[in-house]
Image (cartoon, rainbow, N blue to C red; front, top):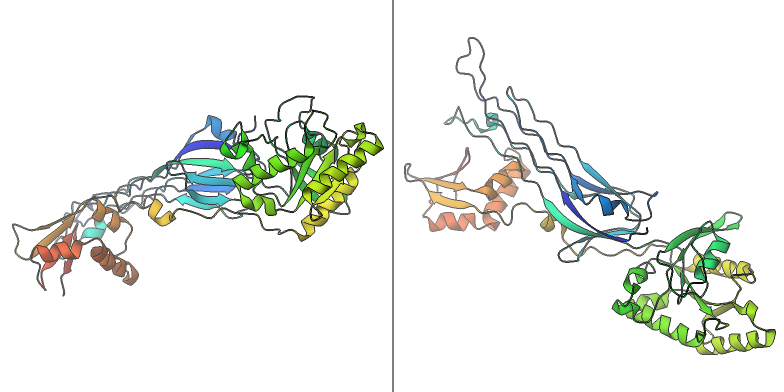
Length: 431
């Protein structure tokens, strides 16, 4: 079964907690703190798998979790990092936030892995919190929390040439004649249910990928039938072959069919009408030479001189070689960049662990001139900020200002020279 949409749950690994322990050795009765740091949680990573062309694997497996970091140990032992989870998707997959439908990333032709969710950083052990005034800290930092998201995956196939048209006009027959694809073909009065891809070889190193897009029906752009499911696969094609039943074998009017299909393409995306296009008049082998000429003249008059019109018989092979050569010529001048959908979400904000978490600012009732800043938001910030580094300390200062903490300290009456205490860290307040 061809599957081009899926909903999945992903979760990064939680950071391991820092450890609280003290050095205990013979003849060292008052050893200092030696609690190790927790391991980092695993990341959620997406990569392209060239061997996949469907999202069928996600029908059975819908939950993907990276490994959690292990807790730190005694004697400054660092906890083991959690394993990353690598999710393989076919080329052309668009990853969206399920709730909002906004694009996170388009894996159109991405060569490098995409890290969607970073694992939580491991918490620091109590060895890091010893100060001149607190030589035996019984506090260790918890690891950063995991991040979990619900995503929707959409596959928009990548092909050089796309076959479009109403059902039963001969698209599947043409693809089977010219490529290695083996679509199911029969005299059905309904459409193929799955897009098919095939490689067309013209010899001398010339080849291209052709996609048989299932038959479009009127109202497809508004979601009638399976229209939207099929139209999304046309977006990445560089050249369109618009197949019509020029002999009206099924009683269809090819001129009206061309008009209807163009309206559907335009309603879905006006850019689709700008694609290089050939009107392919199929099934002319069943007409007499006179009737064939009349049918071709009528179609050419309806589309105008700027649109290429070619006649073929997918059943007998007549005109197919000329059609493929013309399509290849168009590909040589058509833009060769794969259309990509721009991200609609700021990844840093989307995966932030801090914004929603609370914090608390208070004045110590036991010690004069001491102010306390606590809470989950502060713990998380300390988990990934190296305050002993110049860059990290600057980030810390900006964090205190941007989150309104400095203003709250001022409101509580802090003065220059007072002390701000954050989980074992102490800072002198300066105006």
